[in-house]
Image (spheres, rainbow over the protein chains, first blue to last red):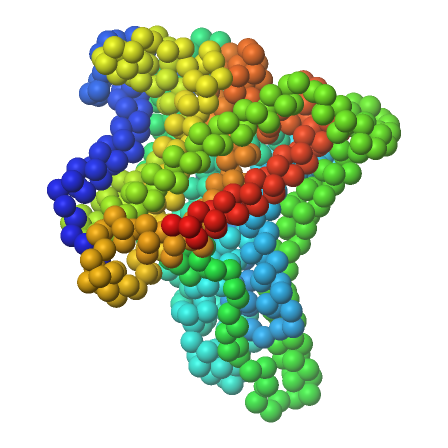
Length: 276
Length: 325
């Protein structure tokens, strides 16, 4: 509980901030339901129209954007990356929090340090590496480098340290459980809440990723959804209602996740801030 | 992930194995206890080494060569790429743009986030609703944000110009000048990140003990005074953290300016490179159409150096500012 009461002014200011936050997203959906003339209207329209089906039709048949492929590819990439990040981060987080091994503190510091390294700047050799592997234009080029993150390991380590009881682990050991069995039956269930938050954050970040896919997926017929959006908006002739239909559809999965799990996501972000 | 980066040692599980078994089983379980931890953390280190650290270091090696995608030979040229950069007007232009957009976006963003966090740190009805409200921009994709804001800032039918027109300010061609395109791009960045930073600040504010405020109130300190002499100094580690993260992210800005500039050659950031950032300049040189890896890699390392320098300067500034307040 906080010390100060929110005054009427507090609510007004927060409402204003909320409106500013939501308006561009709302407006995106408005334009997505209107005809392409909407952009030229003065004052600009702020209520939905009836053109959504037509816009969807043109969006999915757009020859430059390959929008459906983009959506599917992004679902595959974000799905694989999320599952893998959650699994490997939980495993490593468990090791750092609950297992004794030489060098564990130093190695954990290394992981924290890697979170500060702008790895994006290695994009040129990474591109060369993908060329050598023959992975250019293929989804594994964007999946494999992201399979486990320092952020994920650190987050799971912080959670495991307080959520998993040493007694349970010890008891399982006495019963003759191997370490992986302990992870599976004792640790993993206890890590579930943090794993869910990590999964949500990872899914959203991966779904939204732009720079690396833009560098390595050069085949216009095999884009992620963000590259589809870019192809849509960069066309010679811009049909904005169609472009906005694209951005709206591409945002929809994230909005759904956010509406359902918003509380957990906020909790995850704020807890991460305090505990680190 | 803020406050302090110290690592606390947790009491781990004792490694002794108590159950008597066959010698073979015993040896296996000792192997399990000894090797499992390394096995479990190995995926991260292997992946980071191959796809994170190696490319970054190898960038330095590439930058010392005349390295063209199509050429079979890439001769060692020493610092030639760097000395070429020093007299490259377009490179310095991109440095200027990067720093300009960075300052224009980060300073208002963090101040606004601090203020928002202070508002959210009160007894509120519909708390979760307001928190979700400020975070929602952060879940929208950068590409979508850039496209939508590109339209909001369009010269002829953009909402921003329409609103400005209502108060008598003539239509602005946002793409046409450096400052106006910087403002438009900074707005996109701030819209997306202010709420996120506000939540980080809020988390740190809630960890401040209440009695500090109570005794200050007894001493007659008003809320504003309490904010500057209790909240801000105690928030210092978090502010430093947010500044570092914003520096790393802000100086590598790429997607927003790229998509803000549609047209024939958006990677240039406008016809006169009004908003080309360093990452864009790296791309322009390293990838299509030039494929000059060596030169692009030199840009990458200059950017790396800039990030380190700016991060250190920022941390020093924040420290001093927080001490004097």
